[in-house]
Length: 267
Image (cartoon, rainbow, N blue to C red; front, side, top):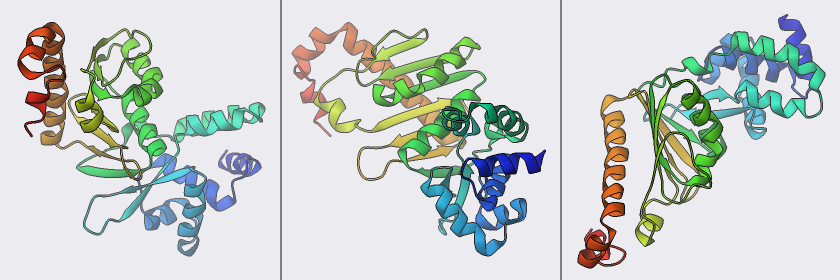
């Protein structure tokens, strides 16, 4: 079976080394270069140049382990997305790959312990989709519709299987959603202080935070209890405050100004 899968991947533009590395990362990720060499059987001198090509093609993406050495680890593009690209031209070959990849994939079992850094907007959102797909009990999420709309499919699937979802957006969502959703007060404060922000807590066990306002987008993932609790409370308190703003807008505007500038500009 493995030989057939390798041959099929090579038909879709993978070299033999690239195919072996991709299959190795599906079995276990993230891994560093030395671990990938041992897992895949690709010679160590060839691993990093192969990973560089695969990273440029977005077949893999790099993850920092957050240590002072800033050692690079690698994770694969989720196999479902790879298959969707292939299916556009070669539908008959994807059945073989889908069955094999599904047996190897451990995407939903990734242990995001402590703190990991992910570089890149697309890679960050791909990882958050994985986390949402693996949610069991609850999701708290705060962000802009530019990102929330890209996650809507995974969020709807999570809601359908009974996951409690609570969300708040800094701008209006285009259509109603079936879970508890709240809208942040709009104004210069939101635009200035929350631009490029996305926060998500999953199952009270894992947190994802994206920053895409300036420079290259990047995100962090952690299961550290303090960071998870802080993020959940941040989203909850933001919802509480904005519900008060919605219910008592006239009274608050009379005291603090139409955009609440007398309060918000204090610090």
